[in-house]
Length: 409
Ligand code: ARG
Image 1 (cartoon, rainbow, N blue to C red):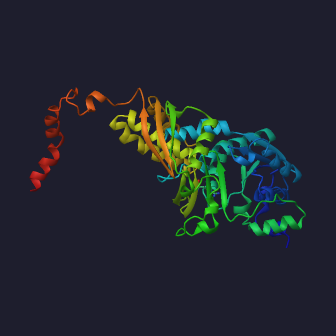
Image 2 (cartoon, helix red, strand yellow):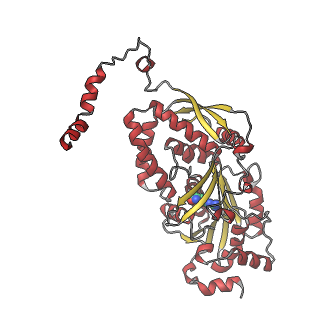
Image 3 (tube, rainbow, N blue to C red):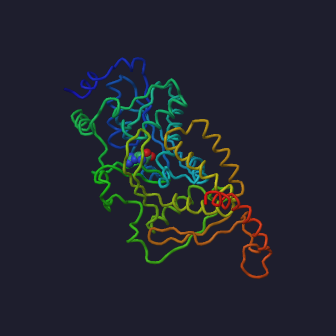
């Protein structure tokens, strides 16, 4: 049976009644290319393909025009939005301020990119008068959650079409169908991996990575050098921050990505808890984000009081989880951002990192706002700190503990 007939026999086609125009999140790859004619046929609707640039290599320069040509050859109108600068200056720099690491290891690179992609899709949908948004996510991952919730937060009435999830499409059958129809798909070297990348990092899963006991094969890594192949000579780099934000924009992040990649920095092999409850293994390459996050965390420790250092990590953890779970547009994000922005006012200064074979170690920091007084901390005899004050402090600080031990003895 023809694939379109098969799909129509399995689903309730009536749900697409009234859908005349669909905006599709379009990468230019094989899967989203097959979706153009499939959506046209199954839903009987016009398709507008939207590609959003977040600093991916393949869209640099005029690279995105390949996606445009492909989409147009398949009968779709195409939009390209270059949102790289907006992404870096917005979500990426806010993630630095929030020390964003999901489950302590993943800088949320894929997750941070989704809301801005949806914003651009919705912008195109409103301009085009489209009634539905479509994406290529499966029914097993986090990205479907992010796409759907972000879409409905910005365009509550939009219908969502996710062919892979909703029509239970198999990759092989969709490709065979397209070939049978004489549809010319973009050719891509065969890779066993599913990859998503933007300027904040690259995520890889599937293929041999699905066995968590196996070390990731070398061919996964095409951004970051293996630490053992990285230069034998260390290199230092100094990063400056003002109000918690790295000083520099897209150019700075590109530079740090190149430098970190050269030194084997930012390879993360994570066992991860997905929003929907599945446990997965994902391998990340996040050179620039790892450098910035290491440096920023150190600077915070330098300028924060003990109480700020104790409290902010709770907010940071919740921020990373909320972003990962697809709740970017939840008002709790505004409340957390207000706290984070307030805390960052004094996070100004510079941090020097030494890069060597996969490690980025902080080796120095400077700030006019540091809660660090050399005259107090120095062990030399002319220190302004009166050590005798510690007697009384220790008596009271330990009072509860010492009394409790006495009572229990
Ligand atoms: N696990 C990551 C996340 O949910 C990345 C998901 C996309 N990964 C991929 N290889 N396509 O944010």
